[in-house]
Image 1 (cartoon, rainbow, N blue to C red):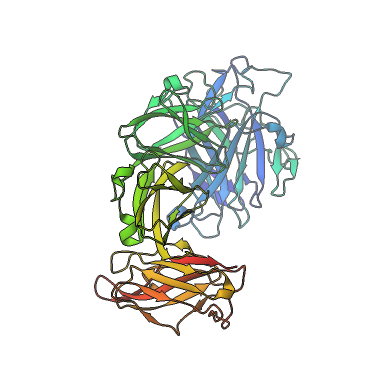
Image 2 (spheres, rainbow, N blue to C red):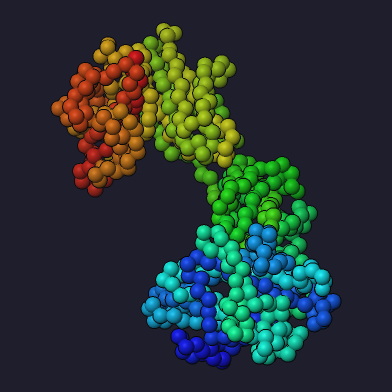
Length: 630
């Protein structure tokens, strides 16, 4: 143990310097003081680690720094008392001079955001600590700045420290260094090991970057009359050979820096990986059949950026990629085939500093819907006929869905699809019964697709709806709604209902005239519970509010112009349907009745009573429809 004393803090017992790899930099000569940086200040200091050509005869020309000792004073409450502990951000730079603006230093070699450090054990009081910290990945330092001593040039490395969470004042790094009592370079493997030391290459001065971005070079009034202008830092490295890049970068996985050396891995998380400039990581893995591979790379986006690319086996075709800005990169890839697929994952390293990251990989089986196999025309399922709205369907890029729709003479059918375009681009085509003649298609880029077909042949005809994926993640869940009408269907679907006590979601459609002055719109709702009471509701906007007021379904109407036809309570028939013709000149709103105007789009739903599986009472909603009037 050692002791640190100051007039304001008294004497504190400190842990002995860490044991293990050799000390290669030692600026720990105590002064009993600290420098307050609690107002968002970052301090910059410098030092030197000797090369084999230096007068101090260093052991190597590069050193892989694996552990440091931090010294600081804090008011942050200790974690043992329920507080967050202290936080220190430590950055290492290559060759530099703290008298110059930090913009001239370039990008740091590495940045460590260290949280949960020992804090104060008494609320609001100051507490000083010397803490050994094992770096999450080694940092390769070139001795004397460039690997060789040059008396005519700068040979120092630069490091910075900030404590951004200190908001109560009076916190910062311990002031260290006393060259008259503890010689520069002492206390290291190279010179007077075990003695107190002032950092080799340290100077009586430091840089200070304020929260507003101003940078000044400062000292404490001149040593030895006042404290020496440097800060506490000890650095250790194993003297086991030269290093490059980030040092001993995940040695249990390297070399995996090319497609030819891609490392075979399973679908399990891998932690503590290292990305260093110019050294991408390659991994080889196998994705099970009919599964979606999900890859997440997690890292500190403030310290650097990673990108992901997924290739076919042997780095063939590019299958997926992710190149966002933030703390995470994610990609998905769906294996359509009935056999596993081998792929190569490339983690593209940052262009400057070293970066530690974790990989999380999982393969999620994609389970097809209950209508399979309806993936060729001759196997078309009748789902759209019997239920009007069918939810929880699944389509993939290698497995289209076909549905047969039987349309009576003088009838029109309208099909609406609902899906998330972010999952996949789902499209629909309508064919004749033999799938030889294309009757129409819908290939938009939104979250819905709509297509209609009218039968005026004099007989009932069958048409085939083909649902397919066209790009995206390779598969998507969707819902299908079908409306049938004598005459023109004038509505479009805005959402699907939630299954009610019949086991089916209720569907709402509208036919008639979309000319507001005609005042002729006929709503009909199907797949409702028999003999249930309810009424229609309307609005000028859409929304999606699950289970409003404890209801079972989803309210798809927005607040603007909302109104209820509460004066026209309807009872459903024994055929599970309800019909209603609203008076467009007397449309209810919260501010009183209004007339529907040309150019206006208005939305409707039917709100009805229902029962729960246990026999209780609830309410539900049909899907929503909209009509744009002329």
